[in-house]
Image 1 (cartoon, rainbow, N blue to C red):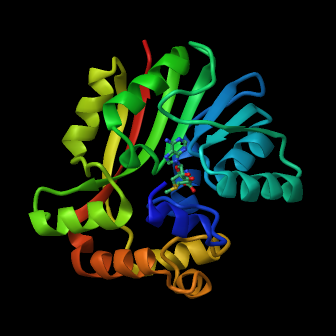
Image 2 (image 1 turned 180 degrees about the vertical axis):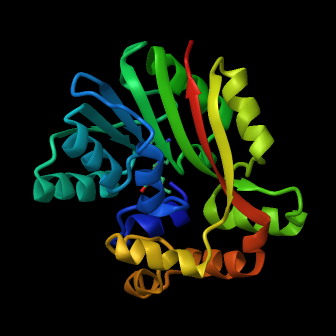
Length: 242
Ligand SMILES: C[S@@+](CC[C@H](N)C(=O)[O-])C[C@H]1O[C@@H](n2cnc3c(N)ncnc32)[C@H](O)[C@@H]1O
């Protein structure tokens, strides 16, 4: 695990993806998820989305992560919230699920840390035919200076930072058909307010930075994002396996 991921695992944060839980709720609004559906939350982190999916829709939710630290926080959350979620310790690149198991694969800021195409192919494998993939990921705009790209990759342990076009190409190469793909600017300081109103769960909130003792990778990340924020965005990718 990268030291950045380890640092965010030490934070008491609920939604560790751009746009935060506010964005998750917005994206899920367009879906009809039924109690019979099997949902896999890939790289579930502290389990906020997984618990929400289980409680709101009554779906069978499997939440997978390769970090025991994250899973332990997620299990505590599920206990507190009385959410029926099956937690699984495992690797996104080789998930312990059979082929065509899931109706929905939910991913929030995970694939950017991995070899993207390999991870997308694995998500394709575990989805049923007509199954849906929803993924929210960091992306780089063409304007991103090369040295800034390298610094962010190094600090966060990212093998790449795909552009909007490169993300779409990866999903299509793996065999997915696009339902919708959209790109938003990287959340700015004002967007933190939304997260604070939704329960103080933003990775970007100053309170959490202080609570995490401003550990070095987070300080570096925050500094880089302050400087280069306008060159990043985040994509919401909704694809179907036909
Ligand atoms: C930025 S966090 C996002 C967590 C959660 N999806 C959210 O939005 O709050 C990335 C998560 O992916 C997990 N992760 C990274 N690489 C993984 C892998 N190869 N297999 C499983 N989980 C992985 C990390 O442990 C971490 O919980």
